[in-house]
Length: 101
Length: 281
Image (cartoon, rainbow over all chains, first blue to last red; front, top):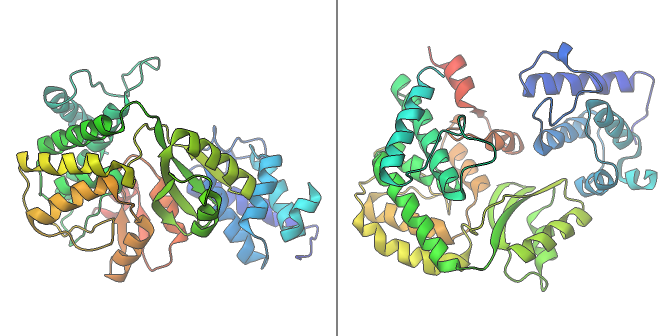
C-alpha cells in the first residue's frame, strides 16, 4: 500500500486538475472541487479509467478495476472533489478498498 | 471547422431528397421531437462524410480508412467506392432489412466498460443465451447486442460484477449480431442494385482486419457488417502494425479517441478539430 503523506492529496489534486484541463481543453483555473465532471466538463467513464491508470503507475498500486467498480456503485462520484477523495482511498487501500465501504 | 456548417446543411437537403423527407438539422430540431433511430444514422453518416470531405480537400497524405460500425458507409464514400447518395440508399436498405427481420421483438445494444471479455462471457454463460459481444474497443471496453430483456439483466449483472460503466445505447436493432443473418441475406441481394466500385483508398475490415478489395469484397463486407461481430481494438492494432502513426476520427463521438489511450503503440489519435487546427499547414 502507498504511504499517504500530507502532500499526497495536493499531488493527487494537481494531477486530476491538470488531467481534466487537458482532456476537456479548458483552463485549469476554471476547475474546482465543486466542478461537476459530466455536466460541467463533459467527462466520461473512460477519463475516469485513464486517471486510475495514471495513479496505478504513479503510486505502483495493486488494484483490480472490478474492486473500484463495486465501490463506485455504492459511492458514485459526481464532482472533481469527490473524485479526488475516491482516488485518495484507492491509493490508501488498494484492493482492500471495499473494506472501507 | 471552416465550411462545415454549410456543407452539412447541403447534405441534409440531399438526404431529404433521397431517403428521409422529414430530416432536419439537429441544431435546429425541437427537443420534444428528436430524430428517429434511422435519422440518427443518416445524420451521423452526413457528419462523417462532411468531415472526411473537408479533410481530404485540405491535406493529401498516404492513408488508410476504416469504418467503425455503421461508419462503414462514410468510409466507403471516403474510399470512393460509393457516392454519397448511394451511401444514403444503402443505409436505408440495410435499416429496412433489419427492421423487417426482427419484427416486433425488442432488441438493443449496450456498452460495458471495466470488465474483460471472459468476465462478460461468464456473466452470460447459461443465463443470457442471446447476448453477443458485437464489438471490442479495448481490453476492457465492449459493445454487446441482444434482446432488451437480456440486456437489462446483463447490465445489472455487470454492475454487480464491478463494471465501471454500463450504458444502454438506446437502439432497437442488434447490429453486428448473428441474429441478423436473415436481414444480411436480404441486404446482400439488394446490394446488386447499387453502384459500387473498388475502394481507391485502402480500406481495412473491422471484422478481421483484412484489406477490402474489389466490388465483391465491398459487397461481402457490407452484408457481413450487419450480422458479424466487429473488433475495433484488433483493427486499430493491425493498422498500427502496418505503420499507421496518426488516426483522425471523422465521426461525431470522442469515444474512440479516448479508447485509443488504452491501446499500445506509437501513434496519436486526433479529433478532426484538433487535426485541422494543429496539423494542416
